[in-house]
Image (cartoon, rainbow, N blue to C red; front, side, top):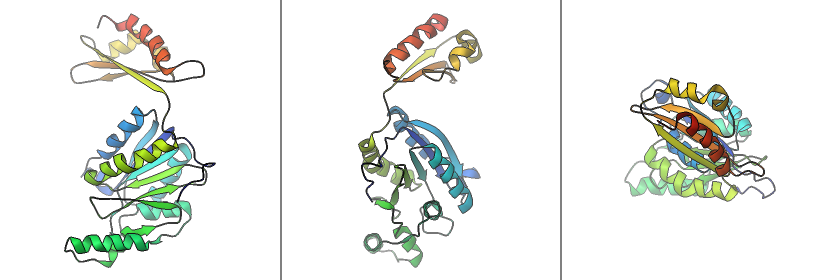
Length: 261
């Protein structure tokens, strides 16, 4: 379903939700969120938070509700399989107040896929052909779980992607990101990182001072690496001031304090 131009909103903020009890019990590590956060951040989108959620309908629905109140786009990964504990579709439908139904076109595609692979088509797989009225299917060329693109009335977007990275990544890169860019993705942002040697993170923080490290734009942050300390400066443009100019101003202060390192 296409969102009318009047209700479309630029994508400036995002929340990422990784869904699956295998994540919350430590059996599987969530790598998807990092693969999503990096291109969003590089495009100038603020990722408000990242959460891992168990396969519990109430928990996922509540997390979606909170995320949608805070962000322009909410991206979920996982929970799109055919089994009863794959609950992402149910949670989105619950949040939207809509009833999922088998989409005939998706069912034809799914049955043909199973036939081509010589696999028996279990009736439980019809769940993967569900759509709700406000959702469009995101093609999955490497698996049996299409994603969902859900337009909300206020212009926000929910994107649901499968959990396997080999399926999620091409869907994200080839289908989702181009459509987010059409909405107006991110904002003018410049980031610069200085790598330091011969000094610890606490000493760097002391030299930079609490006031500089608590500014909201530009953001100056320290990161302890295994063999070094990084100082990262990131800014978004303000009225009359470019992001590059804001970074340059902060960098001058940073280099005065710790330039020798």
